[in-house]
Image 1 (tube, rainbow, N blue to C red):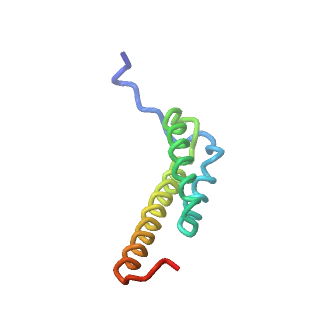
Image 2 (tube, rainbow, N blue to C red):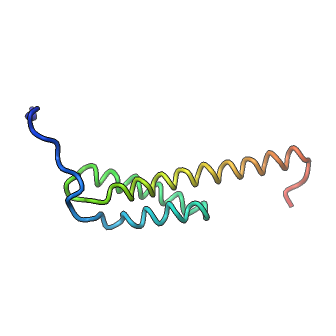
Image 3 (spheres, helix red, strand yellow):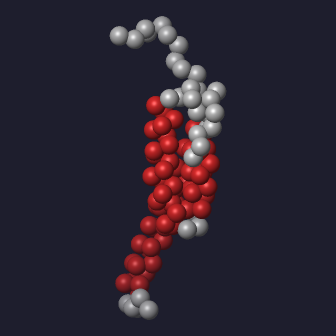
Length: 97
C-alpha cells in the first residue's frame, strides 16, 4: 500500500521527450494536410502514455498535448469538409467530376 502522505511526483523537471516536437509539428501540418493528422494523433497518444508512465523523466508534456489536440481538430475539420462536399453534391444533383 502506498503512503498517503507522500507528495505526488514533480512534473516537468526532466529532459524533453525526443518525439514531442514531432507530435506538435504533425498536429500543425494536419490542419493543412489531412493525412498528416492521423500519425500526429497516433504518435501523440503513444508519447503521452510514455510521459505519463514516468512523469519526472520528461518535461514537454504541454507541446505533446497541443499537437495531439491539433490533430484531433484537423481530423474533425477535414471530416466535416468532406461530409459537407458530399452532401452538397448530392443536394445539387451534380456528379463528382
